[in-house]
Image (cartoon, rainbow, N blue to C red; front, side, top):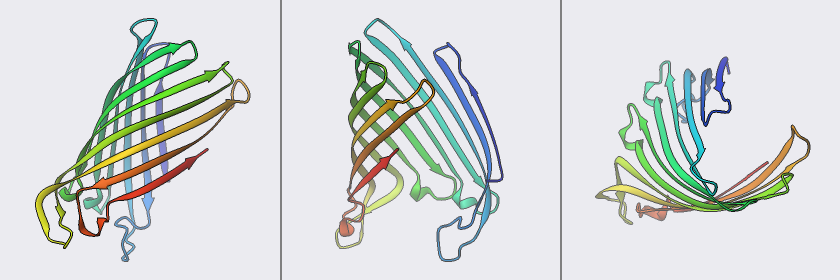
Amino acid sequence: LLAYGDVLLASESPVKIGASAILGFDNNARLNAERKSDGFAEETVSLSYKEPVSDLVKLKAHYNLLNVNYFNTSDEDVLWQETGAGLDFNLDPKTVLETDYTFSYIYFHEDELASSLSHSARVGLRHDFSGRAGVAAGFGVSTKDFDDRESRLSEGPLSGEDRGDLRYTADSEVWVKATDRVTFRSGFIFYRNDSDDQFHDYYDYNAYKFFA
């Protein structure tokens, strides 16, 4: 990491804005045996909006942008954008039903085979125990459609159809507020990816993620 700048604007307003700029160095920009290094510039922008529309319902929306440009390895340049919206329903004073929809598009400037768009939806429950601890869990489904990458048949030949993936996600989280300024969080996320690329079922896999 060579240099970093970050701006966050937040107040009582329902709108929050964040932005950052990074200069970095990658010692293997193409992730291959050549191990060619390169510097890069990265910019992010985030916008979010949360506002109650009634005593029982809160509206939320967001937009995120990530732009990465390498100084020499331009075929690794990428632009990722995401936007979404959802509603939170207060089932009781301590329990919230969360619903979210997200659309995202990732564009590789010089690698059309890797560019793709995605739709995802999630439903979850969040419960707060007296403001000092809480739990959350949810289930989501997403699709990933590639712009110009064909799926393969089980024998290996291309199918003539654009590849598409279907992903199922289950997530959970626990948090404990130790002090007014310190909160401990931990959780678990499970992914199941199911692709229509049939060659050795290479893109059919399970993934697990723990965090704290």
